[in-house]
Image 1 (cartoon, helix red, strand yellow):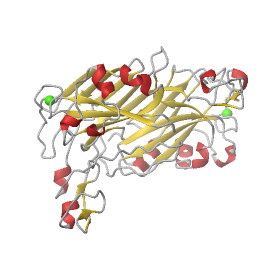
Image 2 (cartoon, protein in one colour):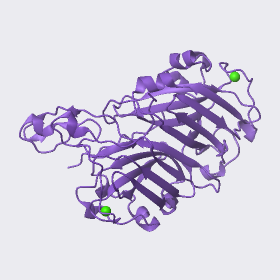
Image 3 (tube, rainbow, N blue to C red):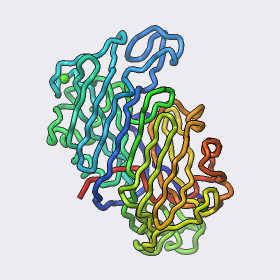
Length: 393
Ligand SMILES: [Ca+2]
Ligand SMILES: [Ca+2]
């Protein structure tokens, strides 16, 4: 039985498919902070994408934004982005006209992957002076549309091929009017919010961990198998599942998992990773306590997926011990980073112990974390939490 289905979709940018399902309560204080790192450029017909510099392989094409660039989105709905080192044709630092809403604007796209699977898209306009620029915008319209919590994906693109189809500057009304306007996503991707592990700099990704509000959704049993997941069944009610976690349920109360939104994870380009979980409750409201020994069958997992932006995914897991609903992890992901990926978007889930823990062995040593990459025995649990943000009350 494989109930744990990732919402991970990222195929070509801005094209996402199915996710999980839920609606959400407002909770105070969630946030995402991420470095913006250069998208990998391709070398085509002897010329690098964006810069046009001479090249033989993709590796000859360097960064087109500095990984000192960064962005943050808070539960207030306010997004702040500071971009540095943007170069264009010939590797020259870019300067635009300084007026948001004109044809030369770069675009910061913010994709919201909510628990209900209905992906939403917002955008901000960015002007640059000698390769640097910043913008602050009220993304409340995105939060409202997405519900929450949602996993955010941040992308920086070059000016649009048809700017008139993505009008407006950065007032809340103009941002709201561009909600889900895919014409705003037609620029060339030059950066995104995530981790770049091939740098000696200090790229970081930090996000709140929280649990969506869930309901018990009615399932359908057909000829002995649940339609949704092929589990064996006798009656329709055998197929009832919680909307986000996909745990078996009879009523909404069976789906009441909780994690305090003060919980968070931070991952650095060095591989250094810290997780802090608070207020983690079972569906009956009891704070969860495990045996205190990492690597035993009662370990919860913090599941981390790196998406390489159209070039595939890699995933690994950390083992989580809880005492009265609280747990901390310090770990080193560097062995997983290399050679698994050089840069990527990160998605994080908090997952129940897998049904066959022996198929997901090991501790939180760097070697064990690397050894669990793509371990199918680790992704059979139920997702009870998600790295995401939601609008403050
Ligand atoms: Ca402009
Ligand atoms: Ca344990």
